[in-house]
Image 1 (cartoon, rainbow, N blue to C red):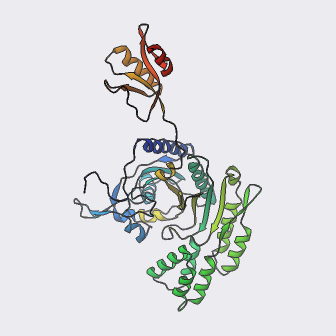
Image 2 (tube, one colour):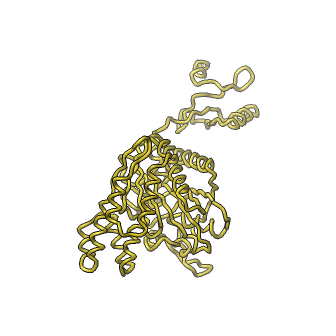
Image 3 (spheres, one colour):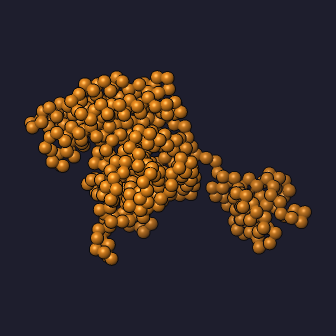
Length: 405
């Protein structure tokens, strides 16, 4: 096998795409800073048990693991940065007030999530710690929508799910961890026939209720700029009428749907899905996923994961979102090559001063190597530095051609 071949699911990022990705990364971090989020940069590798806090076996299967030759402990390459950021909030910052943190960096997976995915996603996200109210959820959703909007105007659907509902139902029955995990998989797939077959022999009432929960989904209608969730919430109230936690869940959904936030995001469609169980081992409350029209995979995901910091010594309310930067950057329309200034390669002091001054003003100046005057790259050199009248002048290439003629 040739040495230059990369492992499956791993790819180089070439100049045009890399420029688009890096431009978007800078815009995202500037956006987050404008909301008061502080940037943190966790390490790529750390102890496995720290990376698995609250995440369950699914995340462990996605991690590359090795043994630390210094300590003998198991180390892992991060597959998700959120547990690391929770550790930083709980153990290193140790602040008592609301903390807003953001991050951007590569993670590594043992397998792709889908045939369209990469094993080395570039994860960007934001987290709020220390506030359990819906204000934090709305701020995170607002920021997520604006972040996606940096890739251009696209039709966006936001799916909401009260992920704790199914867990509360399962808590009533003596199901072991493997059977609970299987139930969640079937719920996520909305596989009602197999779900019914799996539960009916021992738990017929649970089978009936969960099959009805899988049907609790649908788009919400806009009314006066906000969304009306009453029809779907009434169905949920009937199906889950004896669940003590339901009134609080319905109030939260109703409040989110009726928020004036959506008046600022007219291009967003909102839907509810009570059976979207992604992250059930990790999330504790409202979760949300953002989908661009024509794309089968979520472009961003988020939700509440209160009390994950307990394992790090502090119990903190927490909510946040993350997106895959490369995937989002792919939705940015192809931009024309960046304008640049062409200059000859020379050791002339005056020329070097002029080039330095132009670069200090933000201009791209490409010095042409001798013998390569006709070669081109991703920059569009529409101007040129020419020596004229005893000094170096920056003129348009059209004017330069005219002078040369």
